[in-house]
Amino acid sequence: RMLLQSVEIDRKLEKENPEANEPYLSVKLNALAVLYQREGKSFGEIEKIHKEALDIAYRLSEKAPEFYDQHLALLLSNLGIICFQEKKFAESKDYYDKSIEVYNRIYEKHPDWYRKYLAWVLKGDADMKMMLNDYPAAETSLLKSIDIFGKETKPNADVRQSYSMAINSLAMLKLYTKNFAEATKYAEEAIQTDTTQHIIYTTLALSMLLDGKFDQAKEVYMKWKPEQKENFLGDFADCRTRGLITKERENDVAKIEKLLNE
Image (cartoon, rainbow, N blue to C red; front, top):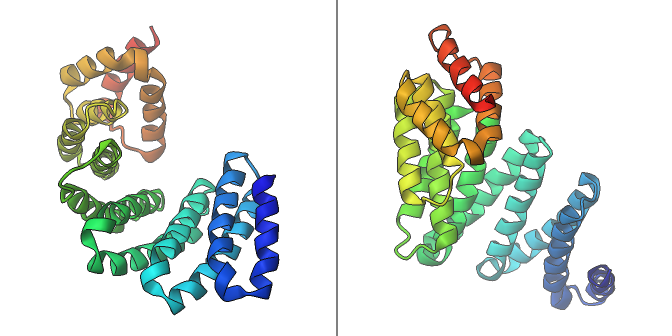
């Protein structure tokens, strides 16, 4: 409530002196939209506030891109994320494309400062394109993201996690396109990059299983069953929807499902 009151005050001040107050209003509107999202407000409410912030950010960026481009790119990526979560993939793609364009512009001037931000947005863009089954475009974004993350000389825990999950997304892409051996290779690389991301073992096990490596897959399934059982079973349902389970692998999948459900 205090943040909303502050936004209302800044809206009035912005009308009186736009040049002085627009930056504060745009930042607070973004914060309010994030808060509304956490509180479970409707997509319409959240989008309306974000777009108000975005309109201001575009004006600020035109006047002083060196100061406001990062804020503009952040708002665009936030809208891309929100639309993705709402399964509005066409809108999400548009916002991600615009965000990447701005981040590329910033990255060219300050690569060390903005490397991880561009890599994060490219990863999100790839995940969205995978949902649209645009695998070539998704792979392009993922390879760029992975390359940029790999240039981080002193990665913190967040960067290592994101780097690892970007590689895992590439493993998933290979799995969806039935390149199971490559999927296994990338899943193993993702685990080596950050061993704390146990969800990647679901990608590894599934890739091995669909590649005919039953015994190796079974070992992973049984080791991580206590923690990842529901994810493992969910993967099988997704694979059936996607038509990834061939007739020669149906029995193997059935055996693992039985073991998971015991």
